[in-house]
Length: 268
Image 1 (cartoon, rainbow, N blue to C red):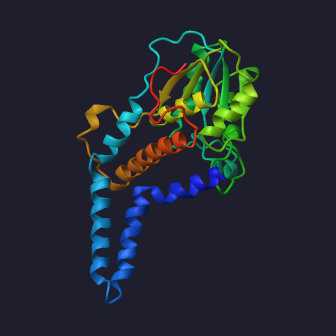
Image 2: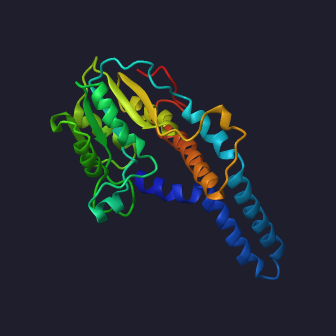
């Protein structure tokens, strides 16, 4: 139930969808005689919101603190495994085409080629099934498996978890599959903006010895605080991601699925 509610809520809380809805409602309301004034207000608020959120640095201000919360380790020691969270495979296109189609978060997967060489003794674990309400013909792990084979990673090093649909299930189902032992260490790979929630979730699920390895950065850091966008769709897309992630952090913490409201370094 949590999965379906979260997916439905995610659609409505995205700023781009909300602002477009304001414009549409305003147009409908303005057709009447009594509420024309309110209709015009809705239209103006929605239109101005789309312009400001689409072209201003608002999205960068929102997402940059998430991306900078965890840094990559200065040096890679030895790890028992590399855990790669799903989100990099377009399961609908992959299922239809029979070839792995990557999303804009593709670096979550492509980094596996480098890490597999740097950590030759580590397991390469991918966790991700189908994170959409309408299922496709393939799972994320199926798409990941093809790429791992192309990268030349030995099959005996690969573990695929293909039932999880969100970050909480990533942590819980992978823990059941891998059965980590005390003293073992793990490298967690996901998009930088998603890393705070992921680390908090893995800790709440009982994982220990986890080190963050963020990828898929969207900003340069504080240098982008004053940088706007040359296309409204770019700014709105990034803002949607940032808002969704901050709300996700709050909801996961309130429901006990994360160890902290804004998890930071110090997780072990």
